[in-house]
Image (cartoon, rainbow, N blue to C red; front, side, top):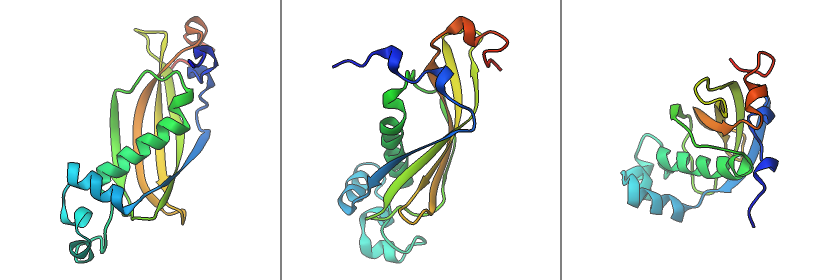
Length: 165
């Protein structure tokens, strides 16, 4: 069944500074092996014994796998209910701690700035700061990016009191 687009979260509904928390995603050893064999076959992602001797001292998910997991959580937690129109870039990703088999990840995303595109007043841009935590509330990854989101009322959003920057 199609979701009524008017009921989705739009540009006007995003509050700068308000954190959105979501997740939980359980990371498995099989998933780490599968992703790494396909996309990042470094020893600390595909060989438990070699991983013990590595800088990370044990098997861990590829950073790119962590990004993919985050994207799944971001979609399920925010984008599925938003009038999202994609995104132009990821400005920064930081892998703070290894993601291990058995970790349960959760995320917090905060809009740090937003504006309406002057050339496309029906499109808003939200600059986001994301944090991913494990089950012990340890920060494992941060990311900054922007995403496009539909403006529900383009004329109002572009007005001096409508939040355009």
